[in-house]
Image 1 (cartoon, rainbow, N blue to C red):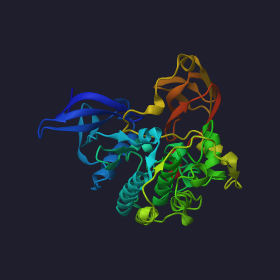
Image 2: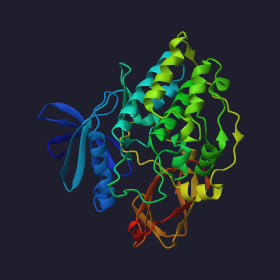
Image 3: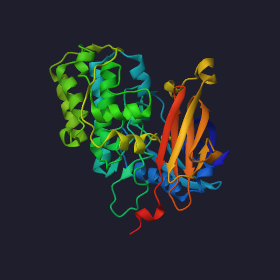
Image 4: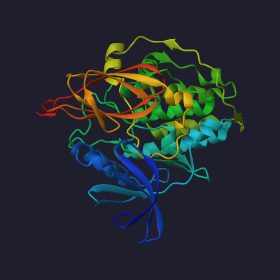
Length: 400
């Protein structure tokens, strides 16, 4: 099979919008990663524009720590992007292995901060910084991938994301992103802070059994200082991470360059040391809710990642036979009611409705005449009820 001049070798990943293939470019005898927009998405102009926006976003970037885009084209009734094929280890696997040295933490953090600082200088906010979107090559070089939901700061551009829609992976999202507020580069730096916390302690600063609990923790809880979770960490690094996780963007690092500089200072007076992961629970304290938990749950409970460049993901390993047989009850509501609900491409009925679904990842889509289409990937991890409330935005709402 071919797309343009590219010969497909094998499929390497799938996402909500596209499929990623390992492909060969015979013109220059080079292996590439070919991201192809799914055929069923071509019918949606909004999603086509989002796909093309990704190509435009990363095509504008030329940095050693950001994946390189080679080509964009049309073939077989769809769109494709040819980019650098990366061979290395996803950062989530490195975190899982634990025992990351202080030198490595500082080096990885400095490279990541420098890369996002460069992207921000070009007017691009990634909005989905997470370990599975970061590849570490054998020589230690970091490569940030998947600018699929990057927001290009262009005042003249039409809004591609419906009002109130939240994109990103919940655990690594900033408080302002969770609440559907406008985000800037400081949101990416917050996500880097979460990753540094995880690298240094083996745990995440916030968590929960469901999306609503995760969002509550991100917007209300104060994380334990990393050094109290892992005393092997230097105080300077612990302080840096806590600064990165401040709920007020004004109190975080304002640029990736400033964050990278601070990271280098952390090791200036420290010897190389091993930082063993500490898996125990972290104490939390609560802060007053910023905008009201009810609003957060209503708007944000359906938030998911539109990640496309996905290699092997250890957290999605095949569940046990018991987990496969378990069912979750997805309670779907929308405002207005009566939206058509599709799960994994199959029409299930109109909202409100209750759906029994097997545990795992499901693609949920809602359509209502004269309203913007809503879609998300929902990870059902536990049996029991999972509420999903979606406020559909009328098309005329964005018109002058």
